[in-house]
Image 1 (spheres, rainbow, N blue to C red):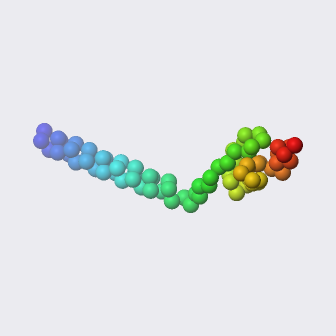
Image 2 (image 1 turned 180 degrees about the horizontal axis):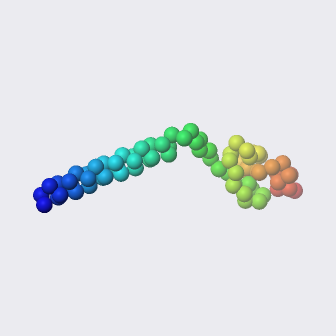
Length: 74
């Protein structure tokens, strides 16, 4: 009976160690995929959010395209 309890305890410890290792390794790989974050801005005309690098800046306002820039100016 004591041997059975010892074997169960050893299996439980091994299971917990493996589960902990997998959780740590998956958390490490999520941040290392090379994804770059970028600020998002809101188009002053239509309200669509888009990456700052894809927007047009006029004064202090951002626009999603030239057509919305022109429509906003009228």
